[in-house]
Amino acid sequence: MLMLSNCHFKFNNNQGKALFVLCLLFVTGTGCQNDIRESEDASIKLITLDPGHFHAALIQKSMYKEISPIVHVYAPDGPELDAHLKLIEKYNSRAEDPTKWEEIVYKGPDYLQKMLDEKKGNVVILSGNNQKKTEYIQKSVEAGINVLADKPMAINTKGFQQLEKSFEFAQRNKVLLYDIMTERYEITNMLQKELSEQPDVFGLLEKGTQDQPAITKESVHHFFKFVSGSPLIRPQWFFDINQAGNGLVDVTTHLVDMVQWEAFSNELIHYKTDINMLSARRWTTSINPGQFKKSTGKDTYPAYLQKDVKDGVLQVYSNGEMNYTIKGVHAKVSVVWNFEAPEGSGDTHYSVMRGTKANLIIKQGAEQGYKPTLYIEPVKSNDAAYEKALKQGIEKMGKHYPGLTLKPIKKGWEVVIPEKYKVGHESHFAEVAKKYLRFLKEGQLPDWEKEALLSKYYTTTKALELALKN
Figure 1 (cartoon, rainbow, N blue to C red):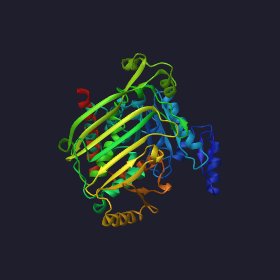
Figure 2: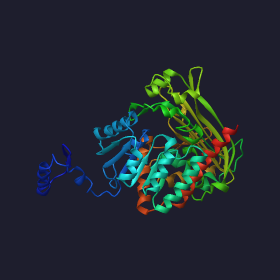
Figure 3: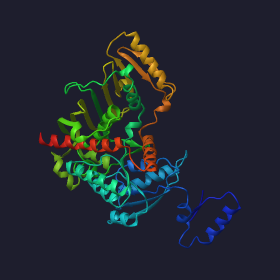
């Protein structure tokens, strides 16, 4: 790729060289950049709308042959847009496998209407202020633009009702509405799911009780962290539950999705009849002024956060727990946000699926070196027949995941997973994008995905509704 002023072009033969000369003649004119680049064989043209969260950029950490390298960005001017563009530039300029994105940016208070009027792409990427996201979704699908949105798509009951309408518009306008569920591509989650689908290894999923759920998903996150090797500066609104959402409706979206995907991906989930919320609660994380500055770069809390400041310290309702049944199976989901992880650690995940023959457990604590580790704990100990069935099951899975082995432990086995499968959270965004591209090519979402998406946001917003009553 050669670049000269506003022109980009490739050449490797006489015809290409002639094109180069022709472009030189017009370099001071209107520019040939878009004429050449837009003609490339890429049916998907991205729009990024108001990127306020780094996940918007992670979709572009990789290139895709189906997607044009030209991306139109519409946003208000400010540090969030600047941070987004810097991250894209970092991917473009990295030494190993650099990307080749070209961002065409419109800045202005009328960015949303400008995007709808110009309609420069056919897929809009949404990752930012969650208070605005539901409106962005509805406006986009009404305009006939496909949507790939970061979680959460809805942060309260009103937002969920609006999301229901957006699906109706999407179906009417024949566009696809999908969210970015990266945890489905984390290797221990994938293997936990596959093992749960082997009756000789897992048995049947227990029904459980509220005190001992059949499925438990817990995670711990941190406000201050590093992304792509640099400290993450969060926008101030990230600490406002009215804009970012309570903890019950944010990261819990991933956990609720995992419950549905692992246990019921072969069954349609109808939220009006299949989900029963039993209990829910929320609590705060304290963020002092020094921590707030470290995370946001700002010395003081903005006016809209003063409602949550007590004795000079910000109290954020970022934590939550819900207990519910899905198709009669008891599940527990909880999330905790601390300010910063201890040195050498990071975000953690704990997951249990209880079967009639074995429990499948993922731990990510100090004992595991803060790396997700999958364990199999049989219900019956010293069962030779079970051990034989398990080894056969792992051998079968090894056809898709070569190198999987079992390591005996006190209560059963650890599944030893080769490092090549542990690609990290940021790499999972490309997997989501590839799946979405496949859905776009097919022209529709699978029925299960549509029902599960609505069920997921019904569950999280229902939990918040119940917690607010307590």
